[in-house]
Length: 352
Image 1 (cartoon, rainbow, N blue to C red):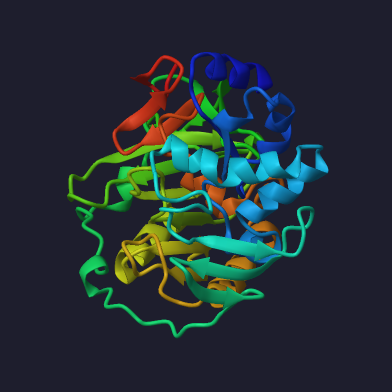
Image 2: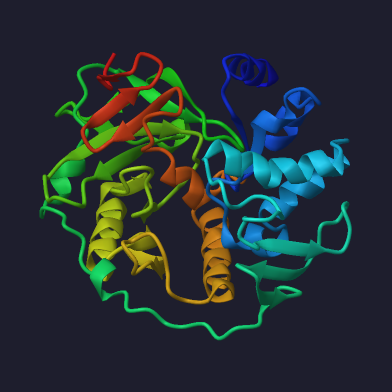
């Protein structure tokens, strides 16, 4: 919020104003920028989907939004350049000056910020969105390969509860924040969580994938609205374990096994059928394929997630899932060793 922003500025901190794919904070924070504090403010995107980069841009999108909301264009450019360089003590970039690296862009005007030319270390490298140099393929064999997951059976997805009241992670539209809520749930005769579609509560699991520890954290999520299937990814900030969400253990297990088989990426299953998989061979986080190709595949998978699995249209299916394991964003998140209460900053039991 603007009040939180001002509090941090008074404490001498820098402010990163984020406009990503899952979190949209820029417009809410820009009213807090003043002539007196603007040099402590800067832009960031955090995670941004290929489609958003191709259609709306990156930091250039922040510039357009800022000017539209009344920020002086020069102030906006400072927040996109020199402010960030000074914050991170990058003393030879962020400005066009003697002794600085000649990294700069030429734009058509200070309203639309359409980039016409790009220069890197004095070299002309791009014109009107097209590179003017030949790209070189790199060997990715040292950062690709199998996931280091300790083998486990589907029974590890059974969630034993001590009571019919559980702590549930409720998702918020267009936000990385979650709410910690208590909900009445159902258990089977063995005391394990039993899914009922009417409750809009589904299971979440985080599986450790780096050191074969065998750790698997289990939790419950509300407002994702997925039905008859599961989604999993090896992008799970910041530890990047496997994270999988679903309304049945079978499809969740199929998703995890698919990711283990291909060495990382994003996948979806329904009734045992693979609805789509994006292979991310570089550490299970990135692809070596061209951006338009990845964008096309992701758009197809997004459509499937919404139209076939019924995912909440106010959420980005894959980006939202990737942040549910990040135990520094309030109020509650899930790690491979359990449910974490960010406000109390301690692990907590699912059962109330």
